[in-house]
Image (cartoon, rainbow over all chains, first blue to last red):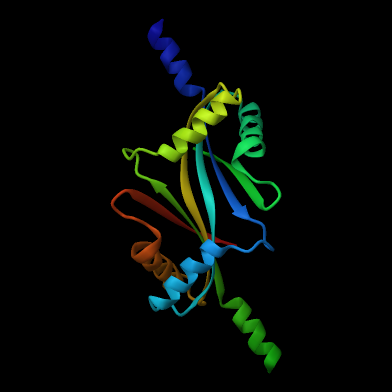
Length: 93
Length: 93
């Protein structure tokens, strides 16, 4: 019985990745510093680099649609500053 | 002629995304803070969250294999701390 429960709870886990990037028109000073450093290191064909955040989230939920909604809610409530940032949610296998 | 050049240079641009994550056994205090905050916000079925970095890189190079090597070099030289972090390179359309 305990083992059965464990098996079920393992199945119920869904993993998502969330990438948060600055909106196109927002300056990215951190990315600019990285870009300059790379150019100084000799990477002459680097055209542009922008930095963002990445989250790997595990949700205890079997239903993918409900889980995705939860992740969406997390993004809106805490992870993303919607004024200056965009986000993208992907499901991981 | 000028237009032809522009078209070519546009074709020559390749875009990559790089995600940098902490290795599995490395503590992620920043992620833990986010996790606790989300739990306090009532996200009870959040099992785990880990934070990483994300880069969007544009390379001025037509050959995908050469460009990918350049990105790899950038990761190894600057973007990634190979002792505690893993990275993954994807090409973007």
